[in-house]
Length: 152
Length: 81
Image (cartoon, rainbow over all chains, first blue to last red; front, side, top):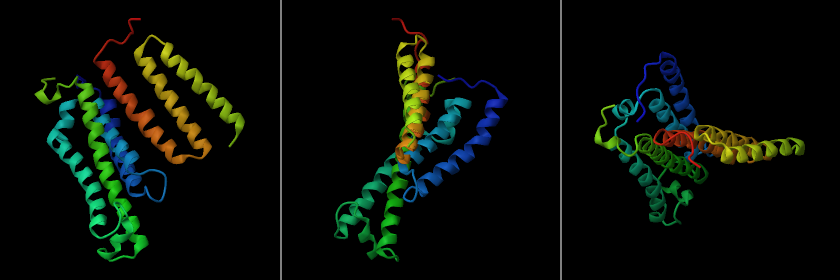
């Protein structure tokens, strides 16, 4: 179990660094279809910001901000966004994940609709990767015992 | 593509990989594996595969090192063999 040791340098650096890390992660997710990056990389960086919080503080601080229930919920929501957009394309008469058909329900043309579909997919992938990374790290760092409400 | 830079980075990559499996301290091994991942990231970027380099930097050098250090917390720091 990682303990909360009182070091003002580590805590201040964590506090300053975390917003920039998260903004960069959202940039990578939102800009993934124009430049290198995408849902997986952005989700990893977003998960790394929570892992930095675990290392600088302790597990209970992170679980106060992002509980196990919320984490599992975000993981499922990400998969649902991915599969939902794919099934929506299937229902509109195209192939699975063929975003071009989305221009029939969105007020944009086919090329723009393709970009919007890719953005939706990447938001779903980013959410799932972020919550899975945080969950794996919490389980590794506490030896699988963090759900029992460890005192430390 | 600069072939001298490729040769240089590949040499350091091999040195880091051999050092990571031969060192006795597990924390040093995790850090050496992180250095290996970062050098591979530089190599991918230099070869023009920027997306792969980004993934390698985020996953290989960032997250997996944190996972290894979290796992070393649960066990002893030195290997027995």
